[in-house]
Length: 156
Image (cartoon, rainbow, N blue to C red; front, top):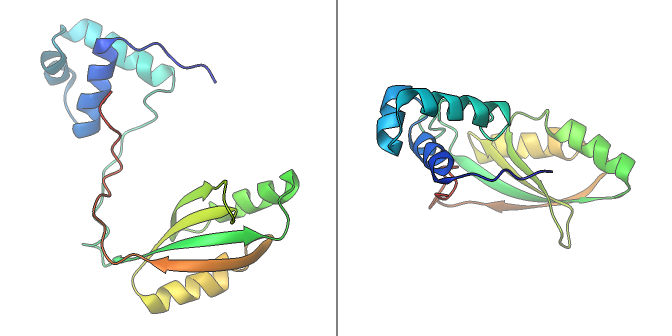
């Protein structure tokens, strides 16, 4: 993977967009101290080079009744590349799983699962997660409170 050499204006664009993805190009230009045309050019380049991968609305899952969060350690019975690929392809299809991370640990994957209740979580665990390819065992940790969960990256 090639890392891009970002200058202070590129970093400023990313920092502003991380705070407000709906900002107009004119307002973005004012915030970073460039005129509109070079700001637009830089923005299009950051999008074309895959630094900016998209824009989306951040939805509050608590307001939607999805306040049960569990982290699940998953151990696989096979960690050869074919087994990992099968697991990876299947796990991304489970809508209740918000995040999936392959780990360098005593377990293979860490999942963040969001549901309406413990009852719903038990159904997801028993019917979906446990039946994913090569799952040997799971361990669940229920979150009591999210202290930080905004998904924003640190300023560049």
